[in-house]
Structures are given as structure tokens and as C-alpha cells.
Length: 128
Image (tube, rainbow, N blue to C red; front, top):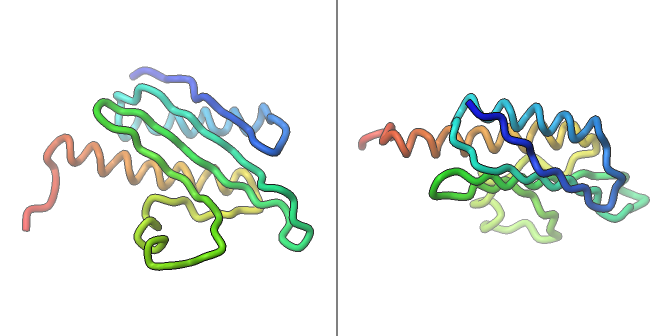
């Protein structure tokens, strides 16, 4: 099982070794679900400061596996419509005021996608 280094990018915030270490730990844990991950890119973003809302962190995880790219992302929008409901399973529960909670939830969502992808590759899907 190969442990690949995650490429971590910080936006609108200072880089943090502790946050990068946590992201690498979470990336390493993804190998339990699928051991042929070819790359992992994580973007941690603190949107522009809003005095009323406080700091809110968003996370985007881009994971490449043979034949596919899996993405978990949350982009804040002012509109909440049916299409965003449809995409809910692809998103982490963001925005978060704690960066570690955003990381945890983002990687939990990625684990679900990765498990589903591995099941499909093994043709381990429910038959109706």
C-alpha cells in the first residue's frame, strides 16, 4: 500500500503545518478504502472575513484514481435550490468555523465516494 503525499493549498489564510499534517493523516486513511489512489489535492480556504459571520472554512478534495477523478467540494452560494440538494451527497457539511471539523467532514464525504467507486469496480452493486 503506497502512502502518497497530499498536495495542500491554503487560500486566504496562512499555511499551517498542523493542518497540513492532519490532511496527510486523513489522506493516508483513504488507502484503507482504495489502495490505487494516484494523487490527492486539498484546498483549504478561509473566505474573506465577514464581521457578522466570523471565520468559515471550506475544503475541496480532488482525488485521482484509475479512470476517474473524485471531488468533494462546497462552494458557498446565496441561493439554495433543488440542484444544490441534488449535489448534497458530493459536498461536505460546510461552511465550518473550525478548520479541523471541515477537514473531518470533507474526508468523510470522500471516504463514501471512494467506497462507492471501489464497489462499482468490483461490480459489488445491488441488483434490483
